[in-house]
Image (tube, rainbow, N blue to C red; front, side, top):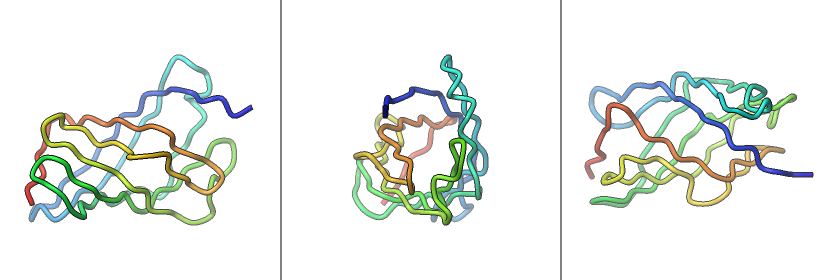
Length: 119
C-alpha cells in the first residue's frame, strides 16, 4: 500500500552573501505518525537556486537531494523542481517529485525569518 504519511520538517540554511542562491544545511523531521521518525536526509547541504519568474512567483531547483526511508531512495543525489512565492514566503513543489524509489508528493516550507527573491 502506498499510503501517504504527513510529517513536519524544519529546514535550516543560509543565503549566499551575494544573494545568488541558498543552501539547506540541516533538517529535522517530526510528526504524530511513528513513520515520521524514519526518514534520514543525506548529502547536505542541498543547493536552492531560482531559475526564472517574478516578480512574485518563481521557479527553481533544489539539487543534491538524497534521503533514505528504511533504505536509500536513490544511490546518487537528484535535483527536484520547486516554486517560490514572495507574497506567501513559501517554497513548494509544483507536482510530485521522484527521488529514486521514493516520491515527494507535497512540500510547503515557510522560512523564518522570511526572505524575498528579487529578479
